Image (cartoon, rainbow, N blue to C red; front, side):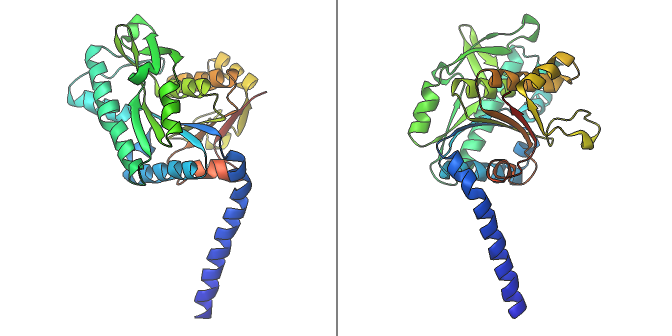
Length: 291
């Protein structure tokens, strides 16, 4: 019996130590704006999704202004396969003809966005789902005729996002933009970066399928702990990044250049990675900092 009591006491003490370590970070983070880009495997696994949305809700309860921007590439690929439509990429961006654009809208707005809103609202009335087309939040234009309906964001109108935050909800934003000629497929990494820029966010977090950025992606020992803005620019100019990482790193540099305080790439498959990054001394992943 005494042994059981001691184990319970040790568990309680460990919990108290965690809270003690987190307290300064909680105080520091209250009132700060954090943009979280969510996608990849952490979105596909229901258990991981439950953990992520629980962590997002906890950030909100701790007094942070959280904006969630999501993609849904794997779900889009699945629907395209079901429709017998080709899956093509160029420089990390999805080639999007009109039929593919319809599939993108169906998946991102009609399915993934609503799944995330439902999951967050299981904790209470906490989330409102929108796309970048709502309220012309992502004012967009075509990137390249060869990419079809892939858009770049000319301007982010934060009015609707701010209204949702002021009403004490979490905005959940699907990465679809709009222009004079219709809808555009926006890379979710780029969309999250542009939202962070427009919101003058204190922190931008990319939940990915890897632990961070590697100097050699085949060698787990080469994980980069942090890079400055200048070092990030040098990395882009080195032309050593693979296709899928190019828009992410470019968006990170652009966000830093626009004044976002910190950007972090972390592994969304790691349990409670958001909390570990924000509320512990060590942090995880790769951090990108101002010079």
